[in-house]
Image 1 (spheres, rainbow, N blue to C red):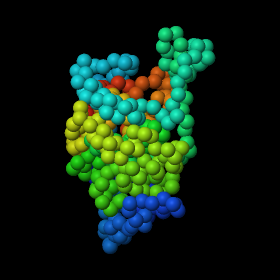
Image 2 (cartoon, helix red, strand yellow):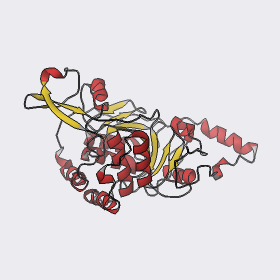
Image 3 (tube, helix red, strand yellow):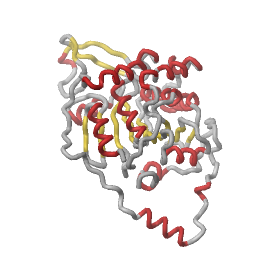
Length: 340
């Protein structure tokens, strides 16, 4: 039912304990063992029965819009009616100097076509193939969970480090007036502040973008915070300026139907095309597993092997079976399928 979150629908949320333990040496901005009011047991059998009945309600049924056809991917093409949108989203590249486009330790070299097999992802330029490498740290077994929204400079900082470290994240969008995940974040953490991170791999949960960035680079990187994320107030200001071209988008809730399963988006923070899709996912409050695939990511090869093509964004919707490229058409699909 739209407007009510059924935690049992999301297995990853279900496994997270509200009394998360924090390993020694990790400091969070909230007490790790803070009990929430939702832990109070039902006071009557009638309440328990009602809850059980709600859990047994059939999940809403979703299908692709009538007449839907999967679009053919068009590389480096901008649909004419989306030119201004893409240009506005691309301003972030200037203000953030490309942070979120490349992985940690990214390097590039030009090699002969024969050096990289035809079934391996690689760009071709002037008769050569581009060989890209990067340095990855420890990989988390489960996606990290982050409660955030698109039009927030502090949230953008965290999304940039997610791209740099090539992490998979389960994003719970928290747009203004959103009925599901904004209240859930308050219930879990105790205050309305974003971003809020929960790492189910360690039990750590925390607020504060700079603290989250430091935690992620220590746990899943090489311990060094990238320059453009280590400049204090200047980092926050430029992250705010990065949103000028899309002011207010990805901020406020648009009534929608909550799907039983999170969507899956292959994308990266530095792409203006991916940003446009993310805005709509946030406004519709659609939870999504984010397969970060910035330049140098080995996940580019995974997607290439899976589809015979690499292009971001790429959407997989387990609720309808739809799999598709092309940002403009993804936005239309999401709106037609999930807007109330």
